[in-house]
Image (cartoon, rainbow over all chains, first blue to last red; front, side, top):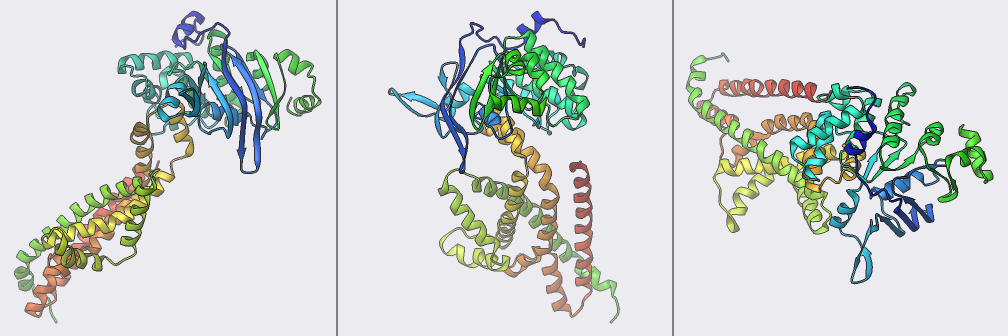
Length: 274
Length: 215
């Protein structure tokens, strides 16, 4: 129940992704339209394993769409996405690239976890089962293994005493920390964070960000983060991507992007939000 | 006209026969309506058009034609080219089938009412389709649909006398026959009270369930 967790333990507790710095995610000329609105326009970018990448930019610039594409909640109109060398929405058959079947998608998707703006915990399940449901039914863990994993993760997010509560009995900040634990219980290589503090009351934001800072510092999990919390982005990021109109207009380490951005558009955006 | 308890006494044996028929029709009819309605609701969401369209057509047809016509059809027409069933069985099937098209709409609304975020969270955790339905969507949908489903049970009780038209004498059917034979009215009053005695506690139960479930 102690708040300060041992980094070495965390590394063991969480995913064990390859930390060779190799390329883990690659978008190739990805286009996504909603009606007449082109949200992503032939987007290319890649993320190396173990890196923490923050996507910033004005709303409507396609940041959240990138996370949703990776989570297969929506499909690209053109282009391909690869995760760990495997195509996410396509598969190779007889040397040709075709739309992936459900089974293939599920297999690749297991490496990816996501935390949502609105938490999206299952209200009909207690905290414990929210976390163990997928490890048991998807990964095939025994109930005991899954519950042990859940307990360890709840300790990490500081909610051990709430294990037998229903989500509605928790504050927004607590629910979001459970959602983080639930995503981590699948030991994903990639964790997607979609404006995870935007729906929280200001005084609850700190607790959630502290947990994420902790995870970012003590694990090798790859993070893709959409946020409006610029100080958080500066803290945890190895790389910041500035989006505008569905394209990356500038990228670099946070010190550079936040202190001396090259693009006028980035300067405008930062002066508006900082 | 005065009230005669002797008439009531004479009616009692047939009254209990009728109550038994009413309760059977209600209980089994409800089970059919609840189960079949869920099947319709899920089939209407099928990705396969050849599953979806026939179900939509059949349920719309049943919902928009009178129960009485359906009972006659099941009892007089279906045996010509299908199974022939007893009046009571026919009545129960008719009631269950008719009301299943209403419960299907209730389930559909309940399922649609589960937020999109729940489906997305299930996808993000790679839960299988079956697991998503059983563990996430249906438990939340059922919670929303219990109150409206309960209302249909009461409505079905009130429609149950229609099965007397094909010879399954429920309590009202028995009362009407008895009254015609004896030129009395007490039996009808007794049955009227019996409907309240069955329906009112049912309504209270539904309301209690509603309070428990909608927290």
